[in-house]
Length: 308
Image (cartoon, rainbow, N blue to C red):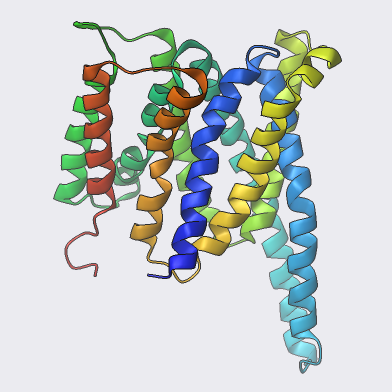
């Protein structure tokens, strides 16, 4: 395992974990749609120079290559198809990201940062389960992960000695399901289009859709947006732009199972960030639920028998 790559992925997970705090603080000044509209558009803008530099490097590496007429015609056709896949994938991912991130934003408003991180992390378990509809088999470890995640969610929803699903918990569960579909769509389009460009398009689509909802359901005021400049910039620049780029660099040459495990630390970091920055604490039941969720996440990442 490359230490440098592992550290980059750990930094990515840390940025994403702390982003839950930024999302919560941002709610003190602006509405959920406003927050996501501004952060997503900033995230898209941050990726533009990254795309430019990557294209520049790719163009320089292709200079001086041989060109054949027939191959050139074929290349044009492939390029057109790639652009269609990129646009369709970016729009599809953007729509799902918009729905998932706004459900998450409303959920964070009515729940604690730590619970939000762990409930959102359910997408790691839900993705392989939803894959059954696409005729992808689940290993026994996945079903064990589902059982542990269910137990973990039950404990996370304990208030005192009483089980209670709050409005925020329910919204976060919907968010986790939507993120599962989002990942499945990315899984389909990522081999067909450039990952950074795909992400850039999805951020702009998410931002524009959130802005439309913002104008309908909220009353955005520039002074309120400026008051929330720090959490918005963190969520837009660090969480969207920087962390996504670090993830791409960090995952190169890394075992995908190990990468997923490191990135899933985001949920644990969100608990620590919520405690350290916001003073939010979890009771004994909820801490046990976090532990069960960690076990579920690890089980979900175990390779199926015979896949090694």
